[in-house]
Length: 339
Image (cartoon, rainbow, N blue to C red):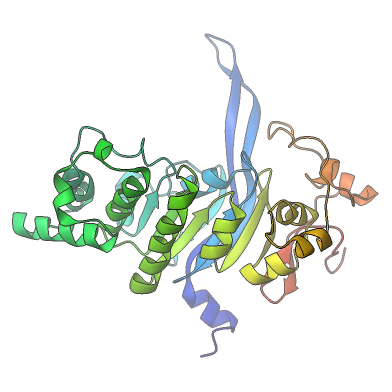
């Protein structure tokens, strides 16, 4: 069957998110707490993720990227919307129903220093998921599995006896990856997994992710703000601004020809080594600061900073419109049918 047909595409999806919202209540009062407002961290996000694919989720700090990832993992309760994983709606699963599901969805955290228990040896850190899910038949199988996982991420088996403080930042992140792989997941959510590492180490860890995907057929939701890293690891890229996705496109298309003014501004901020190319690039100046998610602007949320803003942008919220070729954009510069 042709992979581009709707039926094939639907069967190939491992994750389907529709109109996801995560709002945090703001309360006042000491004795009688009363909600006075909501922080709209994620406010209507929709995307699909196919098997064996990496979807990069990018945007400025505070745009809702990490919150989206935590909601997909159900570590945060969605306010509205739906999350389907491998064809099953998990939006309202309780802890008991989520526990077996967590074998198939894992997370690699941003901080390789804070995400590992400093009092546990690497053997116990990597092996804990095996014990929780009862995946080791006996002690020998347990030890062999840990040795295999450490080798898989480029660490030596004897390192299992060490503590996290005995490793470099890049090695600690490899331990975190090994822990995520222990239960053989099909989806890994990567929450800025290289942003806390030295630049010289980032490429090594990114290559570990790429190699594991090719060997194991993993799917990644790769949250990051470094566009160079996202370009290297992603198949498609979704750009977020103030709780919304403003553009989704195949990686090469979005870098070659970004459509949304915010995406253009992000791409223009990435330095290029060639001075001739750098001098010819389009510049999109941004005004002001990112508005507060407590009170987002009316209409298009980007309009107060957009150099191309029109009157309609101030009053009408643009919808994410299919532009063909696997890309969508939410901008009044590209009106949808019936607008």
